[in-house]
Amino acid sequence: MKSNDTTHGTTGPSTPGDQTNAGGTPRLIGTRACLRCHHELSGQPIHRIEPEGLLIVRCTECGQATPILEYPVLGRWGARIGSSLLLLHILFALGIMAATGAACFGVAAGITQRPYRNLRTFITSKWETFGSDGTDGTWTPYTANLAWWNDAGPGILVEYQAQHGLGITSFSMVEMGGFVLLGTAIGVLWAGLFAGVRWSRLWIPPVALYFVLLGSAISVTLLGNAPKVSIYAIAEGVRFRYLFPIALFAGLVGLEIGVMAGRPVLRVIARLLLPPNRQGDVNFLWRVDKKR
View: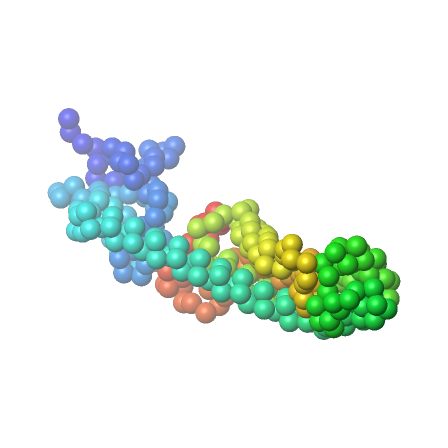
């Protein structure tokens, strides 16, 4: 059968990499960059060059012809290299998440340091009052009876909260605001790092990190069942149950703001800093959110 294809290729058979519009012109779908300027060619009409019969698309930026059918040059090593690069990216992303978690943990612990010291002093004074009246023959100033704390602890915390506060009022708003800004900056970086995650799902990693850090902090401060327990350990347990979650939540808010607003920010930065013929290198910032 004689083909109706011409050099400008307005008609022709459909291929796995093309899509025919209502007028019959096949167009490229998927991802393919221009060989010269790296401009994204998705959606461009497919032409056939005769007499070779080569299917190409022309770049709208520089006019370079780019073939849409290519012979594989790597063979089975292509899949191996691709899998290795994917694994490397996953490990890198996990490393960034771990580093972010460590940074957020440290900042939250620093914010809670001052109220923690006040709480420890208050608990110590209550224990000294209890021990000095002779009701405990093995009294020591820094080690309390776990039974005493289990019995008197709730009342001590209620008294401390009434006198000093045991919540958001315990923190410096300057420190909390700075933590939010730090989390926002990290969240913008996350938005670019997790470029394969849709915008509607970007809120999930910060929430997961928050609960992992919170669960880890609480698990390492469990008092156990020993008859004697350090007052430092008692204060640490209260710190990571009542104070740490609030401080860490400021970092979570910052991360959520950063990841949700990060892609638009990165797209603006790309437009400002990259020349038009190089913006195709970061075209994934638009494609993942279906902006192009």
